[in-house]
Structure formats: C-alpha cells, structure tokens
Amino acid sequence: MSRYMSERFANLEAYVPGEQPQDMRYVKLNTNESPFPPSPAVLAALNRAEAEHLNLYPDPEGKILREKLAALYGVKTENIFLANGSDELLNFIFMTFCDQNRPVAYPAISYGFYPVYASLYGLPYTEVPLREGFRLEPGDYCGIHKTIVIANPNAPTGRTISVAEIEKILQSNPDNVVAVDEAYIDFGGESCVGLVPEYENLLVCQTFSKFRSMAGGRLGYAIGSKALIEDLDKIKYSTNSYNINRLTLAAAAAAIDSNDYYVENSKIIQENRAYTVAELEKLGFETLPSKANFIFTHCPKVPGGKIYQRLKAKGVLVRHWDKPEIAGYCRVTIGSREQMDVFLEKVREILREEGE
Ligand SMILES: *Cc1c(COP(=O)(O)O)cnc(C)c1O
Image (tube, rainbow, N blue to C red; front, side, top):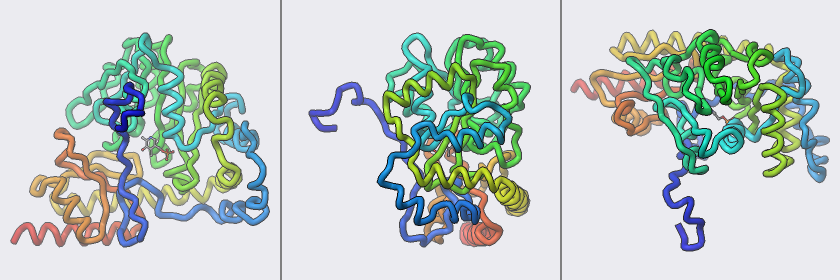
C-alpha cells in the first residue's frame, strides 16, 4: 500500500481468483467454467456488424436482454437488473443494502468474495458456521435482522437448501434483503425465482458464466421486486451507467434464444458429475452431494493440498483452499467426459505413487 492510498483500505484483503493460465497447457477444472463453447447463435451474434457499432455506447438499460430474461423467468422487465458479472452484482448488493445499522450475514464457508465486499465497505458482518457435513441450517438465518447472502447451491460445497427453507428465511426477515446467489442453479437445483412476486425482500442472483458458457463475456443479473431493482439502479447509475458492453448484450440475447442448447449441455454435465463421483468412490474418495457443475471431494489417504499439487504437476488444475476446515478437500469442476477421464487417470496415478 502506497502512502497515497486511503487508510480505510489498510486491512482490505482482495479476492484471489482461481489460476487462469494463458497457455492452455492444463486440463482446467479449477474455476467452474463450461467445457462447451457458446451456442452457434451466440457466435453468429458476435459478428462484424456488431463490432462496427463499437463507436456507440451500449443501451444503458439493456432493454432487449431484460425483456428476454423477464419472459424466460415469467416476471416483468422491471424485475431484472443487469451487471458486469454477478461479482459486480454482489458488489452492488453489499453497497446498496448494508451499512453500520444493517449488518450482513453469510455462511462461514461460502463464496470467497462475500467477506471481501464486507471488508471493502467496512461492514459489520456475521459468518454463520455450517453444520455437520457442511450442511447449511436455514434456522440459523431466521429472524436475524441482517442482510443475508446465501449461495444456493453453496460454493465450494455444492450442497443445496430447498425453496421452502429459503421461504422461511424470507418470511422471518421481512425488513431485510435476502440475496440468494444461484450461480449454479441450472445444474439440477430448484430456483427460488418463483418467490419473487410474493417477497419484496428477495433478490435472486444468477450469471451467464457457468450454465451459459459465457464467463469471458461478464454478465450477471438479479431478479427481484421493482423496489429493490430501483435501488440497485440508483447505485448503478451513480457508478457506471454503461456497465454491460455492446458485444455482451448481443451475445447474451442470443444465448437466451438458444436456451435448449444449454439445457442439453447441463444434462451432460450432470451425467459426467454422477460418473466422476462414482469413479472417485471406487478409489476411496468421499464426495459431498452436489447440484452444481463442480464437486467437493476428499481422499482420506492423501491431504487435499497434496492432491492439488500433484494434479497440477500432471497438468490438471483443480481448486484447493488452505482454510483449516476445508483443507482436506479439493473442488473439481465437472468438464467434458474426456477431461474427467484425464482427471481420474491422474488421480489413479497419484494413488499408486503414494502407495509405493
Ligand atoms: C462464479 C460465481 C459467481 C460470479 O460469477 P460471475 O458472473 O462470473 O462474476 C458468483 N457467485 C458464485 C457463488 C460463483 O461461484
């Protein structure tokens, strides 16, 4: 920190993204991207004519895309907010709905960006412990009078809670926003978007980065009551009115039109997930139940950090955290069948080498 930087950031620890090697040497199973390319319609939308319009600002309202998203989810356009990735959306949520009198609460083991935003805004925060087996207990969030952020499925565990349980949290905190981060909802989970018309305090957060194969396009969105979307808009228009670029708006509209393509891809991911879990089980691994495009797995014989290091040396990247409660585990993105077979082969090699 230079002597010019504001003192208020002295204790800020920035988020550390997963490794993004730029040389493609690795089988990359570390940041939950899709192994599938964007749909043909998305590739066609990113054409020369669109590029030729880059001299013009994009639509600050993203109206066409918001209309398509509204139709897809059965809500109104006024219920949709667009952001430059759901990371920006979460940033806006922490900025808009939390302060000294509205502390924030989120699970102690969850998406690593939540504590960073809490720190960035100097917020009072509560990290709610998970229960046995990394289970999130909905009762721990009932009537707590705090802004609540929950990832469902949770990251990096992959575990889910039910829509009925989310509803209980919403009902018992009517004066606080409950943000449900559904980055991984389309891999077999049940979205709580159907609760939006009933609960003014609900914000459902989703992203094009995982299910829709568009991590490089940076697009996230919230679905929520008109009141909450207007609040978010106020902050967005005080920050960056053109937060979604022209090419991403065009690509995303085409992605919504090819929803079936992504649903098919998700089925393949779910099959590959079941296959990988079953193969790992034969090797003695224990894997948490996952409804996401990743699994959280642990080998009783080999420490998580060692598995991560050895896989990396063999050209396979997975994610590992040194945090004591989860240091035994690795998070493995579910990719194509070919990628999973390479991963499994390298795991078998490591186990053989460890046995010697
Ligand atoms: C990947 C992820 C995000 C961020 O997604 P972007 O849209 O790429 O910014 C948000 N929340 C969770 C839980 C995630 O895993």
